[in-house]
Length: 332
Ligand code: SF4
Image (tube, rainbow, N blue to C red):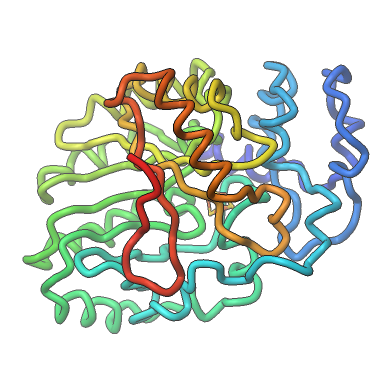
């Protein structure tokens, strides 16, 4: 955990310093990408990941996910809470949108600030979502016997230390109807040093106390997986008994809106024994509309991916609808 904390402490936070620190000058960022303007969701790239981007010559479309673009300041379109988190807030830290599962908002910290994030405005403007009153949250979980699955999210739940996660798991395993625990996280891909042996032991020791623990990795580009430490970390996670690895990706303009890029992503995930689970159509997020594309274009891209990989490698292509309590399946 020490290396991880040191890494975060030395994160890149100043957009104007990127050009001074980068060795790979051949990348040729467009000027609009390195804006120095203040931002309520500031630049944040952990030091080790910045070095990886630079040393391993990440293509521009990978950088696009993390660097601030001038278009972010054009706030005329998009929504602050595009999937209506607030409307489904049922108890402190609990979003109950789907009948048999709840989101548990563990914290609002992230290992990196993804510019497309659908919660990017909520961290600063909807602080009520992250308010805590654990006894009230527990009461809600005990009362709602239809809840089978609890999904740790945030922010990123793995930004929280192991002891805190363990305390939560100890409480949740006492709830008789709660069978499944799921973590949604970008940490193993961005800052794999966080996944120390203590974390592996924590999941190993707890996975049999539930029907299953699921770790859903957020990853949008195969480049993010092609690193020996990331591969090693994923291998350790796949070896835990009763723990399943899934992936979630977002279809993003100027990042992965290319059938070949997506096919490579799903192939790389499968080779690492991660089940491609969701491909999300992008949400209409204020300050992230430059990543947005229409459903028609999304459907065309997905149809082309279908020709490039076997059916079992394809995730569900879905979108969140802020008005209804289920995801809309676009294609499968
Ligand atoms: S790590 Fe997850 S929650 Fe945090 S900014 Fe990225 S996508 Fe959003």
